[in-house]
Image (cartoon, rainbow, N blue to C red; front, side, top):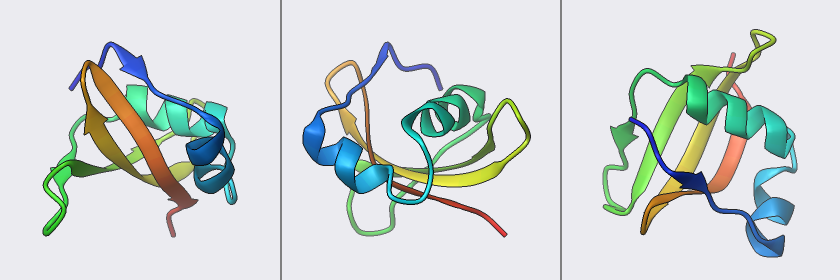
Length: 77
């Protein structure tokens, strides 16, 4: 799925980038072939994808207006 933008601000940058960088999260989102809706939070989605360097990530994000707002991410495996 293609989003027009990835929304960042101080709050989600601080939280989402504890274990991986913002650049890695963005690469994983853009490289994702599919996303899965969260079981209970209907405005949240999960991506399992890889960065350009081959790092496997799980990204949880909130769907907003024209884009996506990363909430948290971690290395898979």
